[in-house]
Length: 552
Image 1 (cartoon, rainbow, N blue to C red):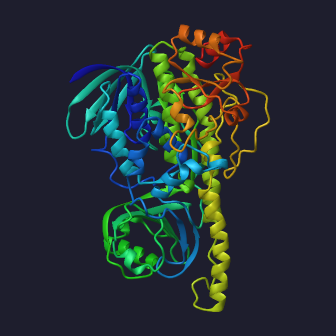
Image 2 (cartoon, rainbow, N blue to C red):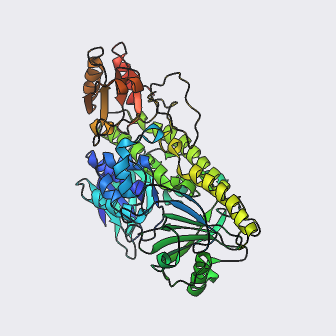
Protein backbone atom coordinates (compact mmCIF):
# COMPACT_ATOMS: atom_id res chain seq x y z
CA UNK A 1 0.00 0.00 0.00
CA UNK A 2 1.49 3.33 -1.07
CA UNK A 3 0.51 6.97 -0.60
CA UNK A 4 1.47 9.38 -3.37
CA UNK A 5 0.81 12.96 -4.44
CA UNK A 6 0.29 14.23 -7.98
CA UNK A 7 -1.27 17.33 -9.46
CA UNK A 8 -3.71 15.30 -11.59
CA UNK A 9 -5.04 11.75 -11.63
CA UNK A 10 -6.29 10.52 -15.00
CA UNK A 11 -8.68 7.57 -15.23
CA UNK A 12 -8.40 5.94 -18.66
CA UNK A 13 -5.50 5.33 -21.03
CA UNK A 14 -7.24 5.81 -24.36
CA UNK A 15 -6.57 8.75 -26.70
CA UNK A 16 -8.20 11.28 -24.35
CA UNK A 17 -6.23 10.22 -21.29
CA UNK A 18 -2.92 9.83 -23.11
CA UNK A 19 -3.15 13.17 -24.93
CA UNK A 20 -4.13 14.87 -21.67
CA UNK A 21 -1.13 13.30 -19.93
CA UNK A 22 1.16 14.60 -22.68
CA UNK A 23 -0.37 18.09 -22.56
CA UNK A 24 0.15 18.22 -18.79
CA UNK A 25 3.58 16.61 -18.80
CA UNK A 26 4.86 18.93 -21.51
CA UNK A 27 3.95 21.79 -19.16
CA UNK A 28 5.71 20.29 -16.16
CA UNK A 29 2.50 19.28 -14.39
CA UNK A 30 2.64 15.96 -12.54
CA UNK A 31 0.03 13.42 -13.61
CA UNK A 32 -0.62 9.75 -12.91
CA UNK A 33 -2.73 7.69 -15.30
CA UNK A 34 -4.53 4.44 -14.46
CA UNK A 35 -6.20 2.08 -16.94
CA UNK A 36 -7.53 -1.36 -16.09
CA UNK A 37 -6.54 -2.81 -19.49
CA UNK A 38 -3.26 -4.69 -19.56
CA UNK A 39 -1.94 -2.29 -22.21
CA UNK A 40 -3.07 -0.01 -25.02
CA UNK A 41 -5.80 -1.25 -27.36
CA UNK A 42 -5.39 -4.52 -29.26
CA UNK A 43 -8.55 -4.10 -31.33
CA UNK A 44 -8.49 -1.50 -34.14
CA UNK A 45 -11.37 0.66 -32.74
CA UNK A 46 -11.34 4.12 -34.35
CA UNK A 47 -9.67 4.26 -37.76
CA UNK A 48 -9.77 7.91 -38.87
CA UNK A 49 -7.58 10.69 -37.53
CA UNK A 50 -9.08 13.97 -38.68
CA UNK A 51 -7.01 16.91 -39.90
CA UNK A 52 -7.57 18.93 -36.73
CA UNK A 53 -6.29 16.05 -34.61
CA UNK A 54 -3.26 15.79 -36.92
CA UNK A 55 -2.66 19.51 -36.36
CA UNK A 56 -2.62 18.85 -32.61
CA UNK A 57 -0.15 16.02 -33.18
CA UNK A 58 1.98 18.40 -35.28
CA UNK A 59 1.96 20.89 -32.37
CA UNK A 60 3.16 18.07 -30.10
CA UNK A 61 5.86 17.13 -32.62
CA UNK A 62 4.50 13.67 -33.43
CA UNK A 63 2.53 14.17 -36.66
CA UNK A 64 5.15 12.57 -38.92
CA UNK A 65 5.42 9.62 -36.55
CA UNK A 66 1.64 9.14 -36.62
CA UNK A 67 1.45 9.50 -40.40
CA UNK A 68 4.00 6.74 -40.81
CA UNK A 69 1.74 4.32 -38.93
CA UNK A 70 -0.87 1.95 -40.28
CA UNK A 71 -1.05 1.16 -43.96
CA UNK A 72 1.75 1.48 -46.56
CA UNK A 73 2.30 5.12 -47.52
CA UNK A 74 0.97 4.60 -51.06
CA UNK A 75 -2.15 2.66 -49.99
CA UNK A 76 -5.36 4.38 -51.20
CA UNK A 77 -7.54 5.79 -48.42
CA UNK A 78 -10.65 5.68 -50.61
CA UNK A 79 -14.13 4.91 -49.32
CA UNK A 80 -15.60 2.29 -51.65
CA UNK A 81 -19.12 0.83 -51.79
CA UNK A 82 -19.91 -2.67 -53.09
CA UNK A 83 -22.81 -5.08 -53.32
CA UNK A 84 -20.31 -7.64 -52.02
CA UNK A 85 -16.61 -6.96 -51.98
CA UNK A 86 -15.76 -9.38 -54.81
CA UNK A 87 -18.90 -8.77 -56.93
CA UNK A 88 -19.91 -5.23 -57.93
CA UNK A 89 -18.32 -1.91 -57.03
CA UNK A 90 -21.09 0.69 -56.72
CA UNK A 91 -19.23 3.89 -55.91
CA UNK A 92 -15.89 5.23 -54.72
CA UNK A 93 -14.94 8.47 -53.01
CA UNK A 94 -11.23 8.94 -53.63
CA UNK A 95 -8.89 10.30 -50.98
CA UNK A 96 -5.10 10.72 -50.95
CA UNK A 97 -2.68 8.17 -49.59
CA UNK A 98 -0.34 9.16 -46.77
CA UNK A 99 2.38 9.90 -49.31
CA UNK A 100 0.04 12.04 -51.42
CA UNK A 101 -1.17 13.88 -48.32
CA UNK A 102 2.40 14.89 -47.46
CA UNK A 103 3.04 16.02 -51.05
CA UNK A 104 -0.23 17.94 -51.50
CA UNK A 105 -0.75 19.60 -48.15
CA UNK A 106 1.29 22.76 -48.77
CA UNK A 107 -0.56 23.44 -52.05
CA UNK A 108 -4.09 23.00 -50.69
CA UNK A 109 -6.33 26.04 -50.81
CA UNK A 110 -9.86 26.87 -49.71
CA UNK A 111 -11.47 24.91 -46.87
CA UNK A 112 -8.66 22.34 -46.72
CA UNK A 113 -5.87 24.89 -46.27
CA UNK A 114 -4.49 23.26 -43.13
CA UNK A 115 -1.24 22.32 -41.49
CA UNK A 116 -2.16 18.64 -41.88
CA UNK A 117 -4.60 16.51 -43.88
CA UNK A 118 -6.50 13.58 -42.33
CA UNK A 119 -4.76 10.26 -41.84
CA UNK A 120 -6.35 6.82 -41.89
CA UNK A 121 -4.76 4.78 -39.14
CA UNK A 122 -6.08 2.42 -36.50
CA UNK A 123 -6.37 3.82 -33.00
CA UNK A 124 -4.39 0.80 -31.73
CA UNK A 125 -1.29 2.13 -33.48
CA UNK A 126 -1.86 5.73 -32.39
CA UNK A 127 -2.24 4.74 -28.73
CA UNK A 128 1.15 3.03 -28.73
CA UNK A 129 2.88 6.22 -29.87
CA UNK A 130 0.92 8.37 -27.44
CA UNK A 131 1.82 6.03 -24.58
CA UNK A 132 5.50 6.11 -25.50
CA UNK A 133 5.55 9.90 -25.50
CA UNK A 134 3.56 10.15 -22.26
CA UNK A 135 5.93 7.73 -20.53
CA UNK A 136 8.95 9.74 -21.72
CA UNK A 137 7.85 12.76 -19.68
CA UNK A 138 9.45 12.90 -16.22
CA UNK A 139 6.34 14.23 -14.45
CA UNK A 140 3.98 11.59 -15.90
CA UNK A 141 3.36 8.09 -14.52
CA UNK A 142 1.45 5.70 -16.84
CA UNK A 143 -0.03 2.59 -15.22
CA UNK A 144 -1.96 -0.03 -17.19
CA UNK A 145 -3.46 -2.95 -15.33
CA UNK A 146 -4.74 -0.71 -12.51
CA UNK A 147 -8.39 0.07 -11.74
CA UNK A 148 -9.60 3.11 -9.83
CA UNK A 149 -11.89 1.69 -7.16
CA UNK A 150 -12.97 4.79 -5.27
CA UNK A 151 -12.36 8.51 -4.96
CA UNK A 152 -13.37 11.37 -2.71
CA UNK A 153 -13.48 15.07 -3.52
CA UNK A 154 -12.57 16.84 -0.28
CA UNK A 155 -13.09 20.32 -1.74
CA UNK A 156 -9.40 21.29 -1.66
CA UNK A 157 -8.09 18.01 -3.11
CA UNK A 158 -9.18 14.61 -4.42
CA UNK A 159 -8.14 11.28 -2.92
CA UNK A 160 -8.08 8.31 -5.26
CA UNK A 161 -7.62 4.59 -4.57
CA UNK A 162 -6.39 2.32 -7.37
CA UNK A 163 -5.96 -1.46 -7.24
CA UNK A 164 -3.75 -3.56 -9.47
CA UNK A 165 -5.79 -6.07 -11.49
CA UNK A 166 -5.51 -9.60 -10.12
CA UNK A 167 -3.80 -8.55 -6.91
CA UNK A 168 -4.55 -6.79 -3.64
CA UNK A 169 -1.94 -4.10 -4.29
CA UNK A 170 -3.51 -0.69 -3.67
CA UNK A 171 -2.19 2.81 -4.22
CA UNK A 172 -3.65 5.94 -2.64
CA UNK A 173 -3.09 9.18 -4.49
CA UNK A 174 -3.88 12.70 -3.37
CA UNK A 175 -4.27 15.14 -6.24
CA UNK A 176 -5.59 18.56 -7.03
CA UNK A 177 -7.91 17.16 -9.74
CA UNK A 178 -9.29 13.85 -11.01
CA UNK A 179 -10.08 13.45 -14.70
CA UNK A 180 -12.44 10.68 -15.82
CA UNK A 181 -11.58 9.53 -19.31
CA UNK A 182 -12.56 5.95 -18.58
CA UNK A 183 -14.91 5.30 -21.48
CA UNK A 184 -18.60 4.81 -22.12
CA UNK A 185 -19.18 2.89 -18.88
CA UNK A 186 -17.12 5.40 -16.93
CA UNK A 187 -16.77 4.50 -13.26
CA UNK A 188 -16.01 8.13 -12.51
CA UNK A 189 -19.10 9.47 -14.29
CA UNK A 190 -21.42 6.86 -12.78
CA UNK A 191 -20.04 7.46 -9.28
CA UNK A 192 -20.80 11.16 -9.69
CA UNK A 193 -24.35 10.31 -10.78
CA UNK A 194 -23.97 12.18 -14.07
CA UNK A 195 -26.23 10.86 -16.85
CA UNK A 196 -26.09 10.87 -20.61
CA UNK A 197 -28.71 12.81 -22.54
CA UNK A 198 -29.77 12.49 -26.17
CA UNK A 199 -30.54 9.60 -28.53
CA UNK A 200 -30.05 6.37 -26.62
CA UNK A 201 -30.12 3.94 -29.52
CA UNK A 202 -31.86 4.57 -32.82
CA UNK A 203 -33.09 1.54 -34.77
CA UNK A 204 -32.17 1.54 -38.46
CA UNK A 205 -31.63 -0.95 -41.25
CA UNK A 206 -27.92 -0.36 -40.66
CA UNK A 207 -25.90 1.59 -38.09
CA UNK A 208 -28.74 1.28 -35.62
CA UNK A 209 -28.71 -1.74 -33.34
CA UNK A 210 -26.35 -4.43 -32.09
CA UNK A 211 -23.21 -4.65 -34.23
CA UNK A 212 -20.95 -7.70 -34.53
CA UNK A 213 -17.24 -6.93 -34.92
CA UNK A 214 -14.41 -9.10 -36.16
CA UNK A 215 -10.74 -8.18 -36.18
CA UNK A 216 -9.38 -10.63 -38.70
CA UNK A 217 -6.51 -11.48 -40.99
CA UNK A 218 -7.28 -12.30 -44.62
CA UNK A 219 -4.42 -11.62 -47.08
CA UNK A 220 -6.39 -13.52 -49.75
CA UNK A 221 -8.89 -10.65 -49.82
CA UNK A 222 -6.61 -8.63 -52.09
CA UNK A 223 -6.18 -11.62 -54.41
CA UNK A 224 -9.88 -12.32 -54.99
CA UNK A 225 -11.33 -8.79 -55.01
CA UNK A 226 -11.00 -7.45 -58.58
CA UNK A 227 -11.13 -3.77 -57.59
CA UNK A 228 -8.57 -1.24 -56.37
CA UNK A 229 -7.87 -1.40 -52.63
CA UNK A 230 -9.69 1.01 -50.36
CA UNK A 231 -9.32 2.06 -46.75
CA UNK A 232 -13.06 1.78 -46.01
CA UNK A 233 -15.05 -0.98 -47.70
CA UNK A 234 -18.84 -0.79 -47.37
CA UNK A 235 -21.09 -3.70 -48.39
CA UNK A 236 -24.62 -2.79 -49.47
CA UNK A 237 -27.07 -5.60 -50.17
CA UNK A 238 -30.35 -6.92 -48.80
CA UNK A 239 -28.82 -9.98 -47.11
CA UNK A 240 -25.94 -8.65 -45.01
CA UNK A 241 -24.70 -5.06 -44.83
CA UNK A 242 -21.27 -4.29 -43.40
CA UNK A 243 -18.37 -1.90 -43.28
CA UNK A 244 -14.74 -2.90 -43.06
CA UNK A 245 -11.63 -0.78 -42.52
CA UNK A 246 -8.21 -1.87 -43.74
CA UNK A 247 -5.90 -1.97 -40.72
CA UNK A 248 -2.44 -2.59 -42.19
CA UNK A 249 -3.06 -2.65 -45.96
CA UNK A 250 -1.69 -6.19 -46.10
CA UNK A 251 -4.59 -8.33 -44.95
CA UNK A 252 -5.79 -7.22 -41.52
CA UNK A 253 -9.30 -5.77 -41.33
CA UNK A 254 -11.82 -4.45 -38.84
CA UNK A 255 -15.13 -5.93 -40.03
CA UNK A 256 -18.52 -4.80 -38.65
CA UNK A 257 -22.00 -6.03 -39.52
CA UNK A 258 -25.34 -5.46 -37.88
CA UNK A 259 -26.92 -8.46 -36.20
CA UNK A 260 -30.36 -9.40 -37.47
CA UNK A 261 -33.39 -9.96 -35.29
CA UNK A 262 -32.86 -13.16 -33.36
CA UNK A 263 -29.07 -13.19 -33.81
CA UNK A 264 -26.89 -12.95 -30.70
CA UNK A 265 -23.14 -12.56 -30.69
CA UNK A 266 -22.71 -15.24 -28.02
CA UNK A 267 -24.57 -17.78 -30.19
CA UNK A 268 -22.30 -17.25 -33.21
CA UNK A 269 -19.37 -19.66 -33.33
CA UNK A 270 -16.07 -18.66 -34.93
CA UNK A 271 -16.91 -20.92 -37.89
CA UNK A 272 -20.24 -19.14 -38.34
CA UNK A 273 -18.57 -15.75 -37.90
CA UNK A 274 -16.19 -16.51 -40.76
CA UNK A 275 -19.11 -17.61 -42.92
CA UNK A 276 -20.76 -14.24 -42.27
CA UNK A 277 -17.56 -12.53 -43.40
CA UNK A 278 -17.29 -14.75 -46.50
CA UNK A 279 -20.89 -14.02 -47.45
CA UNK A 280 -20.10 -10.31 -47.51
CA UNK A 281 -16.90 -10.84 -49.48
CA UNK A 282 -18.83 -13.01 -51.93
CA UNK A 283 -16.01 -15.56 -52.14
CA UNK A 284 -14.89 -18.46 -49.88
CA UNK A 285 -11.72 -16.75 -48.66
CA UNK A 286 -9.48 -18.15 -45.97
CA UNK A 287 -9.43 -15.94 -42.89
CA UNK A 288 -8.30 -15.97 -39.26
CA UNK A 289 -10.16 -14.26 -36.42
CA UNK A 290 -7.81 -12.22 -34.20
CA UNK A 291 -10.56 -10.98 -31.87
CA UNK A 292 -14.31 -10.50 -31.85
CA UNK A 293 -17.01 -8.66 -29.95
CA UNK A 294 -20.16 -6.61 -30.19
CA UNK A 295 -21.20 -3.01 -29.69
CA UNK A 296 -24.33 -0.92 -30.16
CA UNK A 297 -24.79 1.61 -32.96
CA UNK A 298 -27.34 4.39 -32.90
CA UNK A 299 -26.07 6.44 -29.96
CA UNK A 300 -25.88 10.23 -29.99
CA UNK A 301 -25.37 10.90 -26.29
CA UNK A 302 -23.77 13.73 -24.33
CA UNK A 303 -23.37 13.88 -20.55
CA UNK A 304 -25.47 16.44 -18.70
CA UNK A 305 -22.34 17.77 -17.00
CA UNK A 306 -18.60 17.64 -17.72
CA UNK A 307 -17.52 18.70 -14.23
CA UNK A 308 -18.41 18.13 -10.59
CA UNK A 309 -16.16 20.04 -8.19
CA UNK A 310 -12.56 18.93 -8.73
CA UNK A 311 -13.56 16.07 -11.02
CA UNK A 312 -13.76 16.50 -14.80
CA UNK A 313 -14.85 14.14 -17.57
CA UNK A 314 -13.79 13.79 -21.20
CA UNK A 315 -13.84 11.50 -24.23
CA UNK A 316 -16.37 8.67 -24.36
CA UNK A 317 -17.15 9.30 -20.69
CA UNK A 318 -19.08 12.41 -21.81
CA UNK A 319 -20.05 11.71 -25.42
CA UNK A 320 -21.04 8.53 -27.26
CA UNK A 321 -21.15 8.47 -31.05
CA UNK A 322 -22.28 6.15 -33.76
CA UNK A 323 -18.91 6.14 -35.54
CA UNK A 324 -20.12 7.59 -38.86
CA UNK A 325 -17.61 10.23 -39.89
CA UNK A 326 -15.09 9.00 -37.31
CA UNK A 327 -15.87 11.83 -34.89
CA UNK A 328 -15.71 10.21 -31.45
CA UNK A 329 -11.95 9.78 -31.07
CA UNK A 330 -11.23 13.15 -32.66
CA UNK A 331 -13.68 14.97 -30.40
CA UNK A 332 -11.97 13.28 -27.45
CA UNK A 333 -8.56 14.61 -28.50
CA UNK A 334 -9.99 18.13 -28.74
CA UNK A 335 -11.39 17.67 -25.22
CA UNK A 336 -7.95 16.75 -23.91
CA UNK A 337 -6.21 19.67 -25.58
CA UNK A 338 -8.81 22.13 -24.28
CA UNK A 339 -8.68 20.84 -20.73
CA UNK A 340 -4.92 20.32 -20.65
CA UNK A 341 -3.75 23.91 -21.01
CA UNK A 342 -6.44 25.14 -18.63
CA UNK A 343 -5.54 22.67 -15.89
CA UNK A 344 -1.86 23.53 -16.25
CA UNK A 345 -2.56 27.28 -16.13
CA UNK A 346 -4.57 26.94 -12.91
CA UNK A 347 -2.18 24.50 -11.24
CA UNK A 348 0.81 26.74 -12.01
CA UNK A 349 -1.02 29.76 -10.64
CA UNK A 350 -1.20 31.68 -13.92
CA UNK A 351 -4.98 31.53 -14.29
CA UNK A 352 -7.95 31.78 -11.98
CA UNK A 353 -9.53 28.47 -10.90
CA UNK A 354 -12.67 29.85 -12.54
CA UNK A 355 -10.99 29.21 -15.89
CA UNK A 356 -11.75 25.50 -15.50
CA UNK A 357 -15.51 26.05 -15.69
CA UNK A 358 -14.99 27.21 -19.29
CA UNK A 359 -14.10 23.61 -20.23
CA UNK A 360 -17.71 22.44 -20.03
CA UNK A 361 -19.04 25.73 -21.43
CA UNK A 362 -16.86 25.29 -24.51
CA UNK A 363 -16.75 21.54 -25.05
CA UNK A 364 -20.30 20.41 -24.24
CA UNK A 365 -21.91 22.40 -27.12
CA UNK A 366 -19.28 20.97 -29.46
CA UNK A 367 -20.07 17.44 -28.27
CA UNK A 368 -23.78 18.05 -28.97
CA UNK A 369 -22.87 19.48 -32.38
CA UNK A 370 -20.58 16.61 -33.34
CA UNK A 371 -22.86 13.80 -32.13
CA UNK A 372 -25.60 15.47 -34.17
CA UNK A 373 -23.46 15.46 -37.31
CA UNK A 374 -22.52 11.80 -36.77
CA UNK A 375 -26.19 10.90 -36.26
CA UNK A 376 -27.10 12.55 -39.56
CA UNK A 377 -24.35 10.62 -41.38
CA UNK A 378 -25.57 7.36 -39.82
CA UNK A 379 -29.15 8.09 -40.84
CA UNK A 380 -28.06 8.88 -44.39
CA UNK A 381 -26.45 5.47 -44.89
CA UNK A 382 -28.51 3.43 -42.42
CA UNK A 383 -31.94 4.44 -43.69
CA UNK A 384 -31.06 3.98 -47.37
CA UNK A 385 -32.36 0.52 -48.31
CA UNK A 386 -31.13 -1.83 -51.04
CA UNK A 387 -33.67 -2.25 -53.82
CA UNK A 388 -34.74 -5.54 -55.34
CA UNK A 389 -32.56 -6.70 -58.26
CA UNK A 390 -29.52 -4.82 -56.92
CA UNK A 391 -27.37 -7.93 -57.35
CA UNK A 392 -29.04 -9.25 -60.51
CA UNK A 393 -26.82 -9.81 -63.53
CA UNK A 394 -29.18 -8.05 -65.91
CA UNK A 395 -29.81 -4.64 -67.44
CA UNK A 396 -32.30 -3.95 -64.66
CA UNK A 397 -29.69 -4.92 -62.06
CA UNK A 398 -27.11 -2.66 -63.69
CA UNK A 399 -29.60 0.21 -63.65
CA UNK A 400 -30.42 -0.31 -59.99
CA UNK A 401 -26.69 -0.42 -59.18
CA UNK A 402 -26.07 2.85 -61.02
CA UNK A 403 -28.84 4.51 -59.03
CA UNK A 404 -27.50 3.14 -55.74
CA UNK A 405 -23.97 4.14 -56.72
CA UNK A 406 -24.99 7.74 -57.33
CA UNK A 407 -26.59 7.94 -53.88
CA UNK A 408 -23.69 6.24 -52.12
CA UNK A 409 -21.06 8.38 -53.82
CA UNK A 410 -22.90 11.52 -52.69
CA UNK A 411 -23.22 10.05 -49.20
CA UNK A 412 -19.50 9.22 -49.08
CA UNK A 413 -18.64 12.77 -50.02
CA UNK A 414 -20.98 14.16 -47.36
CA UNK A 415 -19.58 11.88 -44.64
CA UNK A 416 -15.87 12.12 -45.38
CA UNK A 417 -15.39 15.54 -47.02
CA UNK A 418 -16.18 17.46 -43.85
CA UNK A 419 -13.92 20.50 -43.39
CA UNK A 420 -16.78 22.26 -41.61
CA UNK A 421 -16.96 19.59 -38.93
CA UNK A 422 -13.17 19.41 -38.73
CA UNK A 423 -12.30 23.08 -38.45
CA UNK A 424 -15.57 24.92 -37.84
CA UNK A 425 -16.29 24.37 -34.13
CA UNK A 426 -16.51 27.71 -32.31
CA UNK A 427 -16.53 29.04 -28.75
CA UNK A 428 -18.15 32.40 -29.45
CA UNK A 429 -20.16 32.40 -26.22
CA UNK A 430 -17.30 31.38 -23.96
CA UNK A 431 -16.64 33.80 -21.07
CA UNK A 432 -12.87 33.62 -21.78
CA UNK A 433 -13.27 34.73 -25.39
CA UNK A 434 -13.51 38.43 -26.23
CA UNK A 435 -16.21 37.78 -28.79
CA UNK A 436 -17.28 40.14 -31.52
CA UNK A 437 -20.80 40.68 -32.76
CA UNK A 438 -20.19 39.27 -36.21
CA UNK A 439 -22.24 37.19 -38.59
CA UNK A 440 -20.74 33.72 -38.90
CA UNK A 441 -21.27 31.26 -41.70
CA UNK A 442 -23.87 28.47 -41.31
CA UNK A 443 -22.42 25.52 -39.41
CA UNK A 444 -22.45 22.86 -42.14
CA UNK A 445 -20.33 19.70 -42.28
CA UNK A 446 -19.03 20.32 -45.79
CA UNK A 447 -18.48 24.09 -45.50
CA UNK A 448 -15.59 25.83 -43.81
CA UNK A 449 -14.81 29.49 -44.42
CA UNK A 450 -11.69 30.67 -42.55
CA UNK A 451 -12.74 33.20 -39.92
CA UNK A 452 -10.36 34.97 -37.55
CA UNK A 453 -13.11 36.31 -35.30
CA UNK A 454 -12.33 35.32 -31.69
CA UNK A 455 -13.76 31.94 -30.73
CA UNK A 456 -12.61 29.76 -33.62
CA UNK A 457 -9.49 27.97 -34.82
CA UNK A 458 -6.89 30.43 -36.06
CA UNK A 459 -7.06 30.47 -39.87
CA UNK A 460 -4.12 28.69 -41.44
CA UNK A 461 -1.68 29.76 -44.16
CA UNK A 462 1.55 28.29 -45.50
CA UNK A 463 4.50 30.65 -45.08
CA UNK A 464 6.57 28.52 -47.46
CA UNK A 465 6.36 24.95 -48.77
CA UNK A 466 7.51 23.51 -45.45
CA UNK A 467 6.49 26.06 -42.83
CA UNK A 468 2.96 26.32 -41.50
CA UNK A 469 1.81 29.45 -39.71
CA UNK A 470 1.06 27.11 -36.80
CA UNK A 471 4.74 26.15 -36.68
CA UNK A 472 5.52 29.73 -35.68
CA UNK A 473 3.08 29.76 -32.78
CA UNK A 474 4.39 29.24 -29.26
CA UNK A 475 3.45 26.10 -27.38
CA UNK A 476 1.55 28.30 -24.94
CA UNK A 477 0.13 31.71 -25.85
CA UNK A 478 0.98 33.58 -29.05
CA UNK A 479 0.70 37.28 -29.85
CA UNK A 480 0.61 37.51 -33.62
CA UNK A 481 1.68 40.97 -34.79
CA UNK A 482 0.81 41.63 -38.42
CA UNK A 483 1.50 45.38 -38.52
CA UNK A 484 3.95 46.05 -35.66
CA UNK A 485 4.70 49.55 -36.91
CA UNK A 486 1.01 50.39 -36.38
CA UNK A 487 0.29 48.38 -33.22
CA UNK A 488 3.12 47.04 -31.11
CA UNK A 489 0.96 45.22 -28.57
CA UNK A 490 3.41 46.38 -25.92
CA UNK A 491 0.73 46.91 -23.27
CA UNK A 492 -0.65 43.42 -23.90
CA UNK A 493 2.83 41.95 -23.67
CA UNK A 494 3.43 43.79 -20.39
CA UNK A 495 0.09 42.66 -18.93
CA UNK A 496 0.72 39.07 -20.01
CA UNK A 497 4.20 39.04 -18.49
CA UNK A 498 2.88 40.47 -15.22
CA UNK A 499 0.24 37.72 -15.15
CA UNK A 500 2.89 35.05 -15.61
CA UNK A 501 1.74 34.01 -19.09
CA UNK A 502 4.22 32.24 -21.36
CA UNK A 503 3.69 34.44 -24.44
CA UNK A 504 5.49 34.08 -27.76
CA UNK A 505 5.50 37.27 -29.86
CA UNK A 506 5.46 36.47 -33.57
CA UNK A 507 5.85 39.13 -36.27
CA UNK A 508 4.67 38.24 -39.78
CA UNK A 509 4.13 41.10 -42.18
CA UNK A 510 2.32 39.49 -45.09
CA UNK A 511 -0.66 41.16 -46.76
CA UNK A 512 -2.42 37.82 -47.19
CA UNK A 513 -2.33 37.21 -43.46
CA UNK A 514 -3.48 40.71 -42.57
CA UNK A 515 -6.42 40.40 -44.98
CA UNK A 516 -7.35 37.13 -43.31
CA UNK A 517 -7.02 38.24 -39.67
CA UNK A 518 -8.22 41.85 -40.28
CA UNK A 519 -6.57 43.33 -37.19
CA UNK A 520 -2.91 44.17 -36.53
CA UNK A 521 -2.63 42.22 -33.25
CA UNK A 522 -4.13 38.80 -32.52
CA UNK A 523 -3.97 36.82 -29.26
CA UNK A 524 -4.03 33.06 -29.81
CA UNK A 525 -4.57 30.46 -27.10
CA UNK A 526 -2.42 27.37 -26.52
CA UNK A 527 -5.06 25.30 -28.37
CA UNK A 528 -4.73 27.58 -31.44
CA UNK A 529 -8.08 29.27 -30.82
CA UNK A 530 -8.26 33.04 -31.41
CA UNK A 531 -8.99 34.64 -28.02
CA UNK A 532 -8.90 38.31 -29.05
CA UNK A 533 -7.91 40.57 -31.93
CA UNK A 534 -7.56 44.34 -32.11
CA UNK A 535 -4.98 47.12 -31.79
CA UNK A 536 -3.14 49.19 -29.23
CA UNK A 537 -6.35 50.98 -28.29
CA UNK A 538 -7.50 47.95 -26.27
CA UNK A 539 -7.73 47.68 -22.50
CA UNK A 540 -4.78 45.31 -22.21
CA UNK A 541 -5.36 44.42 -18.56
CA UNK A 542 -8.98 43.49 -19.24
CA UNK A 543 -8.02 41.33 -22.22
CA UNK A 544 -5.49 39.30 -20.23
CA UNK A 545 -7.73 38.98 -17.18
CA UNK A 546 -10.59 37.77 -19.40
CA UNK A 547 -8.66 35.06 -21.21
CA UNK A 548 -7.22 33.75 -17.93
CA UNK A 549 -10.64 33.49 -16.31
CA UNK A 550 -10.19 36.24 -13.74
CA UNK A 551 -13.37 38.03 -14.83
CA UNK A 552 -15.68 35.00 -14.88
